Length: 322
Image 1 (cartoon, rainbow, N blue to C red):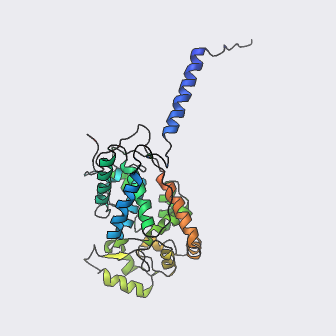
Image 2 (spheres, one colour; image 1 turned 120 degrees about the horizontal axis):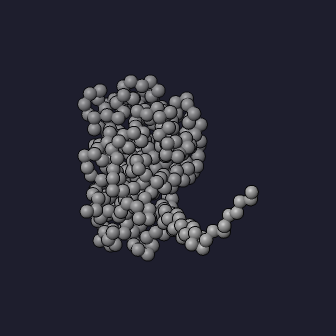
Image 3 (cartoon, helix red, strand yellow; image 1 turned 135 degrees about the vertical axis):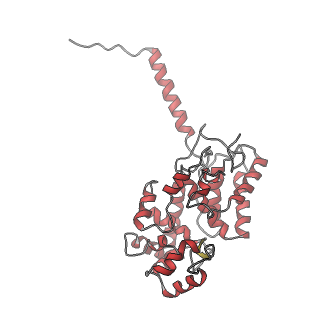
């Protein structure tokens, strides 16, 4: 017996069309755009750049700190400024961040200036993304187009920070896994690790390497031990790139080949493993490193952003709007 299906009613067809339109709108609203603030806050990017240039000029290390803030934000819940929220159960006090992340005051200054210029328009998450790019440029690194339109989270995850962020004691397999979990290839992980061509680390995080590891240049080891006693001095600083610590270049990779990686996780990138060849490639061609780093940063900035009506535009980056 043949079955007979009636044609869809006009009402049903209309509902389908409306649903499709809604989906298209939602898809469109979820797209970040490099021109997002052109009309609503036309001086947003220049305001941020001026503040970052000033901060980095005052203290070169701040460039690395602001770059790290963006990274630690995006790896937990996506690029949503959750790392900026105060609170005893938030990301700020997670193991990888507590007494380690810095630059919050610079972000506060930028946010205050933007709230004066165009209140309630520019998100803290976008400020972090632009500040990271401008910091790299200020220290001689590559530029890239930052896509904008992120909104700010109303939650912060201490447990997420503890579980998702790779640490200074990570082995190569840990690093590959942590970045793979966020959609990055091993090559992109090596490129992003090149951010350690700027910045400093505390003795607490390289003491074991300075005293207990063997894949380390002997003179470099002696130097580290003079800066980092076997007990005490946890906050003593050493540059992640001993060659050109305030210049964004490829010297970090050369240091690794010479067994002068400051952190265990750094030296793991050149220790007879699968990433040795990529380190050699970046030593041989700095232009390739710069391009790969910029592309990986663009990709990182697109990690699970809140868009459309999700989240909010925080008035104060440290607190959720009341």
